[in-house]
View 1 (cartoon, protein in one colour):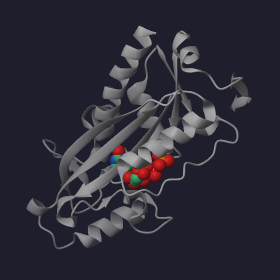
View 2 (spheres, helix red, strand yellow; view 1 turned 60 degrees about the vertical axis):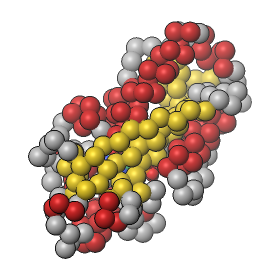
View 3 (cartoon, helix red, strand yellow; view 1 turned 30 degrees about the vertical axis):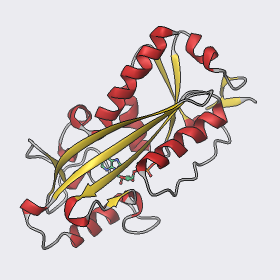
View 4 (cartoon, helix red, strand yellow; view 1 turned 45 degrees about the vertical axis):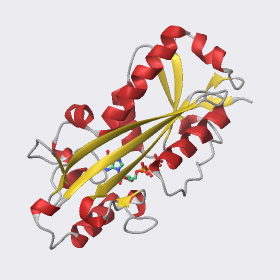
Length: 224
Ligand code: ITT
């Protein structure tokens, strides 16, 4: 099987675990269709010993068939789809915003809260409408990020990260993506979208989950 990375051949055949471990850099496929997420994953995981390859850059890459009711299962589906297609270690990230007073919704349905093809703005607008009459002290929420690592040979591992805070009453800030403009992390007065990307990554759900993954990969790389 010939796999293309924007024109350049990056792997001639599916690699066995030994093959990918023994190279100078650890090659890791990132399975997401969300460019904002891909940017954050790249910023957080960036390291000289790690080569990050977007799954979308492999010609013919299939779309993962999500649809489960858990972030864990969805993250695994994304990682397995990339691992099975490329033969390379792969990661998937599934993230949800869990609002206390909504019994954890939108949760696993965060991307389609306002409908199948909803934009970030549609979802935020629906959430603000639903919470319109809810006072500040009852607007607690958290982001939960689940990162799944799927290795050639079948081993899999999950990494989780959380960010606790509350939802404000109107969108603020231009950084970040998704629900960031209405989420104020505990200990801050600004929304995640008002923080610099590096500060968001430092305290975010994704930052926490991916730094655990990075420590794990580093150990694997050093042991190879
Ligand atoms: P992939 O499945 O292709 O990775 P996605 O956008 O569907 O892309 P998720 O299911 O993990 O990814 O995310 C669901 C939604 O949650 C996403 O579309 C955003 O609206 C929101 N979201 C995810 N991460 C976020 C973050 O760090 N800050 C704010 N909102 C986020």
